[in-house]
Image 1 (cartoon, rainbow, N blue to C red):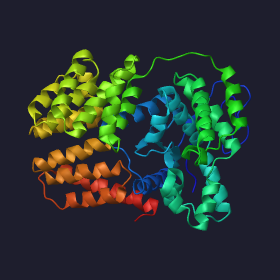
Image 2 (cartoon, rainbow, N blue to C red):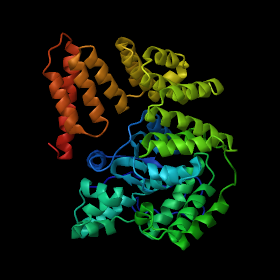
Image 3 (cartoon, helix red, strand yellow):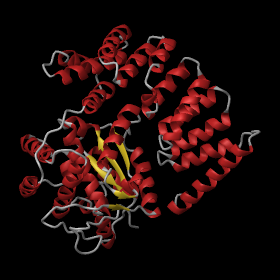
Image 4 (cartoon, rainbow, N blue to C red):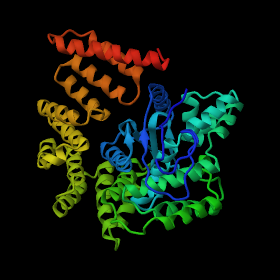
Length: 473
């Protein structure tokens, strides 16, 4: 089974689609993306297997950030760019991977290891290049020729790395496949070259890639234990670093303004997903004194989130009010204030905070989620439903919106619609078996709506067909 993205260079390609050679002159490129049903099938199975081994983050603000960054990097990609999917995994390892079917994942450890958004974008651009150049399918073809298993579950274990991956490698065949699925030096050179193109076309300086790789190499040399997980499947050599540095001369040098969203995404990871909230709160309390205004501002936000986690609701509310007063045009601060108010039991006031968001902000899937969640907790279910259905018209693939809609429909005594929404939640998480089970439960409830009956029946048929194609039913 082949999977991945078909890629060609209009000016720099020689040979077949599976053997892309980059010309020494890195000129304009045209990247055409095609995903076949077979590719999507393995991609779905891959993510389903990965979800059983790692914690995928469903925080709407963080997901919106990672997906937005991914979309920025793919703006100039032609063809079926919408088939690309971006995920965030809660794990301290410095890692990222591009799986089958255009599924790309970033670990929180990687986000925290970068120093600016351009560095993070450089890693994601590199992963996009691996996918575009069909490196993983080429390696899988090689593994099949050696009669090694290439199931989605084993591939997920290898790419996830760490203890999970080590467990899967206990068998001889798993260890052999792990070696087969490590990018070789030529693949890394190709991904670096195309990654630089993708990075700069998205408006980031090419030097960011060298900055991150150089620091990762230096940290690796200083570590007494093994190399960072990312270097296990992405070998970093001095020759590779020299080649990247050499290519930088072909790109203009420029700087970009620090990304407010990047700083706040890193802060949110530290505040919401840290194992010890007390330590995070203490760190933020120190950082609010930073001479760097952006670091200090993000620390104020992190302190509010940490105080909510610690149950210090009044301090969180007070600090969040100050943030909103100082920066009324940054919606995450309103969300933080609303969350603090909800935690203190002031649901109606939390609703009023979010209802003052600009209409353009309320159309954001993340903002719509928090507004609907707050409305529901204030007992305003009809309003919550309107917000969610409006948001889903513009963002029909946002799984978390369906999960919240299922709760709203359930609270308003619409079980059939509730199970239908829950099915869509699982469907967009690549959990087809669970989606089908929810739809079949939905079908068991009566309704006066012939349209609803027909839509559920059609969806059941569609998912069964896809599962038959996947070989999972």
